[in-house]
Image 1: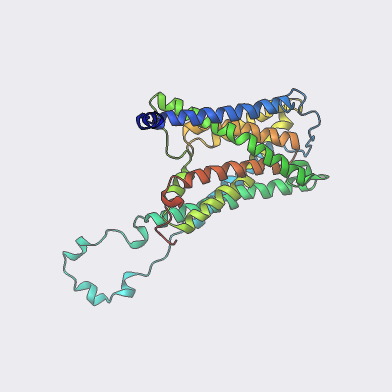
Image 2 (image 1 turned 135 degrees about the horizontal axis):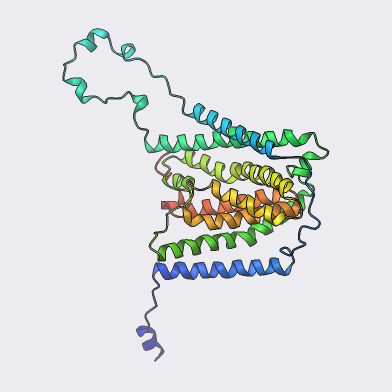
Length: 340
């Protein structure tokens, strides 16, 4: 009897669409549980920022303008350095003039119209160029803003600690950042997944990747280029972006709006953080990035340190990168065919 039932049993096969909704529902449940725990612990109550650091470092709109100028100039310089044309030897140095003049008149028609330096770069060169450009912009442009911010507050008493560049309680900040990553990452990915599924139901296909840099990683033909992109996304971007959006932008907003309106400050800075990603990230990722910005801003206001926000940003980007590598054969992100 049991064998007959077993032979007649056919496992139910779920379509990928149903599987995606089930996974998204499970992630939503995890995120809601984490959110409920935060509410129960009082982290979101009206007086949650009662004991938050004052962060009185005297930053204002002029500092924000100077930081923007530093960002633009540094980014432009980085792009100019990486895109500087390579000098190729002139044709006369590799081919005698007499030989060149004796070629048939019809031969040049079969040759490329451009020199090797102006031909379109192959996939490997393109991915390497993109990786180097991204890192150069981060170091010279965004890193320049970080240096400006540090120099600007260094003259204040305990200025680096006040702005959060030097943590007051490193071990506690590390623990806060790790716990925030465990609680917040499911919530952010929930929002992204649900937005993508709703868009898919409305006739907007889900993108393979939600960010242009992730797409470049997926299509990279060079292991070295892939490694550089991963360093850029997981190690460099969280540090410089948190220094800019939380350390500079959010602190200037706090001075302008007042310390009794920290939630307003967090929301406005999160809107700015999200809008900066328009064009580089798919629209399905925007609500998730807004939620991520809220959590990052909340962490900064609660702790007065950039370290928890940086760790959460690192964790989010690392999970994104790890999920991306699973999309490619052998988990190599497309880099397995080239030694770089």
